[in-house]
Image 1: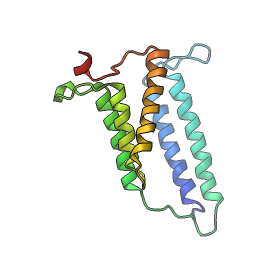
Image 2: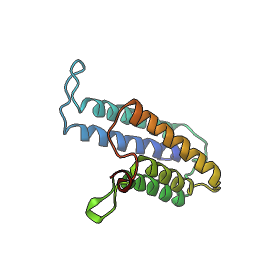
Image 3: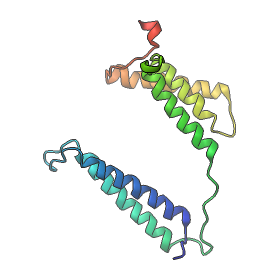
Image 4: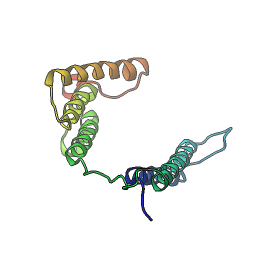
Amino acid sequence: MKLKSQKDFWAGMMYMAVGIGFAVGAQNYSIGTGARMGPGYFPLILGVLLTLIGAAVAFKGVTAGPADGDPIGKWAWKQVFFILLANFAFGVLLVGVPSIGIPAMGLIVAIYALVFIASLASQEFHAKSVFVLATVLAIGSYVAFVWALNLQFPVWPSFITG
């Protein structure tokens, strides 16, 4: 079988894998009905929809595309590394890891770390624009999650707030 678009085919496979994962994971929860939804209802529906979208995209990759096969380029390992590291650092800094002595640094510090680490994935790094973006995201997150939604999680480092 000749793939006409490798990008579409493998993107569809990825969507299908994530969709099947959500649908299977939802089986651990009560699904309920459309009128009385359980905690597994939304992940199940999301998984089914992602799987269907993935099947459509993969089918398009087999049937439509350029004649030469539209090859996939190289993996962007640097970008993958920094984006994953930024998300990991955000989680660790937000609530800390008491078992290994890392204190909770709070939302503001975690967002600044997330933005600065993720910006290293770019080909260009402009400290001033990254600082402005981090400040806007930190203020927006504080307003949305702490002030408007009244969610309870650390905002500032635990050694400052006690």
